[in-house]
Length: 438
Ligand SMILES: [Zn+2]
View 1 (tube, helix red, strand yellow):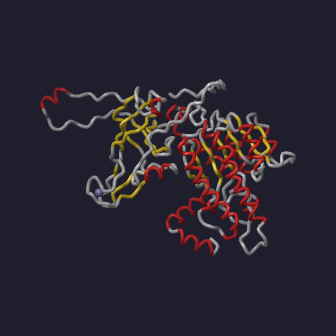
View 2: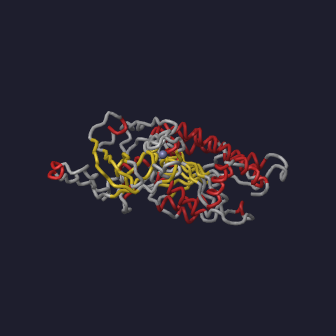
View 3: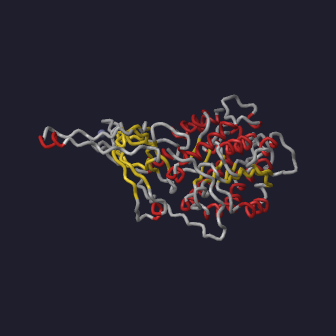
């Protein structure tokens, strides 16, 4: 059984902070299909369209019939552990710093045998009994070994952002997330110090509450106008880990000042600050509203990333509560412009593009950038929109789940899921449908 993680001791500030060494991350183009699915929290393998054989490792032609049409398909992950190996030595710097490390060989019920990182709660397989008498009589081929240890295989992104397979116990246990190997793969909020950039909105407040429930040690909550009393703010400031900090993303000096104060301590940044006005182009004269949206949604992210990014990167190998993740609350309108919210969509598309740049720059340090694409949120700017809308609390739990499970792209809510499917199917068709009102 996994032992619950203990709160780490205060670090000696004189000691050097360990530098990050990434696990091997080079993958071929075909194998990146597995990474793309894992980035959204799914375990997919290729399945042959002609003979239905499940493929592993990823390849260009079916291992059984050589057909070239292999389709990425979600897998249940059910399987049996055949054997385990505990590494006590490795030439790879990442694993060498994290030994001992447990690996297993799992035969999936779907067919292939895969190598997995083994969760500590998976029992060790008993070596199969060889029937020496039957073997000496030479009665037919030996039956395949059975260990009787069932495992559930899931795909996760490792610290380098590449998909790896993990063998979980078939049933969840209480402190499962505290497993040493699993904590290396994800960005669990437990005992971490987190900055939420805007506490005045319903989403910001729901986020703070969800992060505190998930065990965050400190949650700094940004407030652009700290002299103002706002609804709901007292509820979150009453929570012990919460500290209100002045932060105005439209003001470079305000961002720099906050970074100077807490930059060396933040483990997770959640950038939820946004300006949202419901206009297209013709409905409003001038560029003030569009500029305000751009100034927070795009330039705000840029200012924050420039000031907080370097400190975050420097602390990505800093013990069990190392700096881990950067979350951007974007919008599903970033994929394709929704004309009634046209300028807002444009600012989120710009932020999405910048977030991809941030992800590429953070990856060598092992910091995960999580982009969240909610559909319309149940707030004042979508008041006239018919449901379904994403409730702030549901959005907050989707973000905490993504941190815990190491998911990189999150599309919370039915609307976001449906848009994503239509966009994947044909972006041009979606553009026409949105121009015609959805
Ligand atoms: Zn085939």
